[in-house]
Amino acid sequence: MKPSELKSQMKTRSFQSCYVMAGEEVQVRDIYIDKIVEMSGKQRVNAESVKDIYSELRKKSMLGGSKVFVIRNDFEFVDDDKSWKITNDSIIGDNMVILVFSMLDKRKKFYKQFKDDICEFEPLDDRILIKYIKKEIDLSEKNCQTLIGICEKSYARILLEIDKMKSFQQKIDMKADYIFSDFLEGGLLYRPARDCIFEFVDACMSRKCKKAFDLMQESFESGEASLVMISVLYNNVKQTLQLKTCDSKDVSRSTGLTGWQIKCVSPYVSKWQVWELLDAMEILRKCEIGIKTGKIEDCMAMPYALVNIF
Amino acid sequence: MIGQDMLLRISNKLIEKDSFPHILILEGQEGSGRRTISNEIGKMLDSVVIEAGVSVSDVRSMIENCHKMVNRTLHIIPEADTMSVAAQNAMLKVIEEPPNDCYFILTVQNKNALLDTILSRSTHYKMEAYTEQELREYIDTINVDDGTADTMLMLSDTIGQIKQLAEIDVQAFMNYVELVIDNIAEVTGANSFKIAEKIALKKDSDGYDLKMFFKAFMILCLHRMEENKDSLDIVKYSRGLTITSHYLVECGIRGVSKPMLMDNWILDIRKEWMK
Image (cartoon, rainbow over the protein chains, first blue to last red):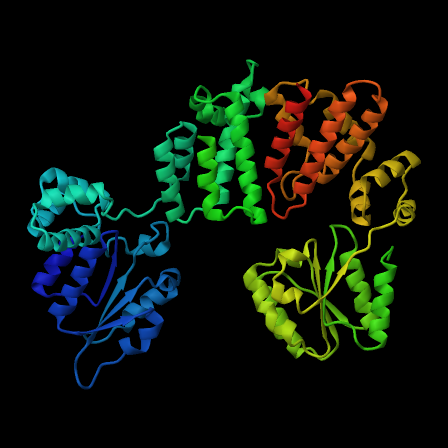
């Protein structure tokens, strides 16, 4: 079911007894849920699982007043195919069940069976997002595009960032675009930490000092352990050394490296001297032992290694 | 049970006086007989012997069970120095108030890895070093020729290490180490890393034990020093011995990366021997 079809049902108030909602666009999805509850005029009940509300579904209240049961991420229900039909048949009267999932595995039987009925809220189109952003704050189209990129098309995150800028604008009377530039430069727009360990290693091996430090910080924020970073960086340094010191035509046989490994480290060979690679290996090893013996603090080991390597 | 006579005598006396410590820490290197002697103590205590794990959940179920036990029980926690802080904290309650008929033996390689709160509430005992006589006694029970027996004696400090050597072709191992000594400084840099292919650098991987390899290398360096008393090569082998001894110590650090250790050892030896 597309959101547009759901919208039509809402307009005509011809609601189903059960909805399944999923998709990345959480804000819009939650708006639809709130609207359905409001328009149906029923009491909203949030529940942990279908099992919890099973008996409630079969009740017809003497006092009237049906309920809308909103259940989030009941993956046990998704895996239990016997309970799907039973649950649907159990919904009596005007009760309604809305199953909400942050993520649905498309390989599972549940998705395949109810694919046409599941209402998936995909990230909104850029044009629509720009329209919504301009309704809230007067940003140029270019800045809107940048904001959409930073917030990874998430309407909820966009609204939060706009809220920040509007609060700032209330205190300091400045054009929205200037505020946006200041926020961008000052790192005030939230960017979740991502898994960037391989980018980090690439930055180190390419001798991009500032980028390496920034990515190191981001890796820490995403929960990466120093030992893992040291280990991956060490392997790249060693492979670069092996490639650099190999004078045989049959590189793979001589070094024991695979073709893929050779391809990955080849760009780094010209950027390092042999003695630098040897030093780097020793520093990384000492950091590793330092962490394990408690001589170096985990949070200090990687910065210490980078400073000495560069 | 070979060796550890003193500990067995002391344990016996304490058990007779009904004053055997409820919490005992047995410190010793791998293969030094900590598990064996723990089982012996279990027999002397006439108790049920249970081996526990080191995770938090294992410790918690051990504590839960020890309160339900009717018979005298000895819980052995092998490699207790690998326990996380959370697991050690979980043990504190039972260490402070052990049930009457419950005994605990924690075997460790390094007792300083345990919390001070555990150390202060337990009795410690360090495993005695095996004498040459005791090691020979054990070697005599396994069928090896004299040459191999002598090599095993040179390389081993504990019964466990002898058992490890008994599983491999010792002569082939020593030949391999000789090959490394002769060629490590001769081959190209890229090729030199291939030395590590025959060493077991990861858990459950095939190959020679790294500690054993370093020990064998040191012994052969010593022999070469004796053979080259009148030449400058004595310096070369002396440096090789010193470098390898540092790496042997680092080998004993819990959780150390053996591949990194091996790589850097190769580089250091080459750096020194190619001067």
